[in-house]
Image (cartoon, rainbow, N blue to C red; front, top):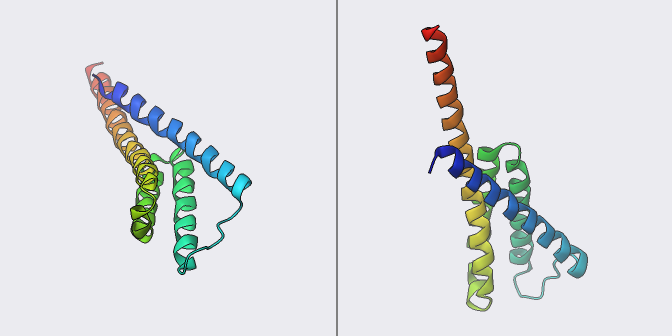
Amino acid sequence: MSIETILGISRGTARFGTVAFVLLILASIVMEGLPKPTTSEPYREYLTFITLLLTVVGMVIAWMKEIVGGIITVGCILVAFIVDFNAFQDEIWKVGIYATMLLIGICYLIAGWLSVVVKKREEEQEIEDNQNQ
């Protein structure tokens, strides 16, 4: 499997996941509205919501700048995971959502790294071709 194929798969997977999560977040906000704290720790719910929103913003940024957006996505989802860790005992389904968002961020980081490798390889090939002429 070539680097270009892996690059295409990781980029495509990440972008498909981004579209799915943007639609999921928008549908959630439209149907349920902003979070209404029901626990004794309302700051936790708001902080989780903000970090998840920033995660999606990172995913959108990653469409243009894969490495920067990937770092934002992975960082924010890790913060959201730490903030919301106690909720996983009651709502195990959240682990799947957080893990999927983390994988999307990792796919963006892989795609960004591979695009740098491919670009460097093309530049080296171009220099070699120019020297052979």
